[in-house]
Length: 327
Figure 1 (tube, one colour):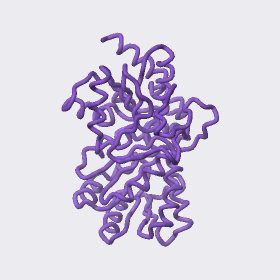
Figure 2 (tube, helix red, strand yellow):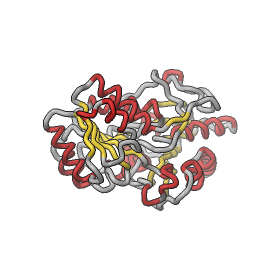
Figure 3 (spheres, helix red, strand yellow):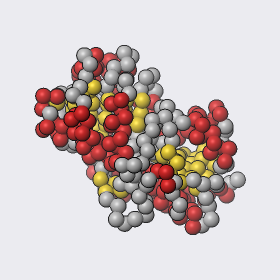
Figure 4 (cartoon, helix red, strand yellow):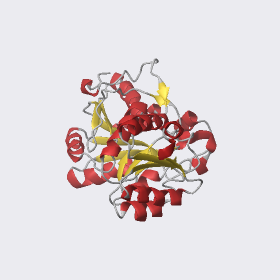
């Protein structure tokens, strides 16, 4: 499989890839960012180690705020710190933030464009054994509905670190979606992360696969199998879900007759919806969405749940082949 050399990717098929979580990338990036920007402060809701904010708390205790189990209050405190010139990173599990404090994020943060960064860990079904009640599957949808909010969904550990640094540069609210499960790290320090852009990791002519988060690696695995079966699949990483790269979508809509979107999120309101909204206005194309089909998760191991719900390369391959036969 020929990857886009300009993306400086590691071989996604290599058994030697290290595995690390995106929440770990967030925690390590905070440490580096805290050293170079003294206005960075961190808040969490009694979950410092789980969301990997404990690294920052240990090194910079004077800039760390433990808000207790009170995400609503944490959002309001964060907005106050932002209005005083700080750059707050508030963090919790996705099911609690933005799950519980959406109204405070809307009114206290977005309405005044407070410079707050909201980072959620434990999103998607890969939360695993914590069960359906703790698997945030609607967070992108509710955050996409908010004016002024920017959303980054990084695909691995390295890209999460870049997302944290880019978020700090943006004046205004930013949401970053992270996960608990350790996943293959296939991007590198040289891999571009450009807000407002879509990264083409592999080019193709028959089908375009748009993916975000943990599903980018699965999509590359699927593209390799499809290629060996004579199907040319492009794989595009969509990590900025608000400032969608319309020119890129238009280019591939003219090039391929089929779009497939893949996300560890409900199919309504997330990546699939975002691509449909853009394509329908500029260059209509048939879109098949892969994701949670408006259902709740289950209890189980994270990687097993991905396969159970069809969030895996095998189902991407099957779906592409079925949809191409419908042409």
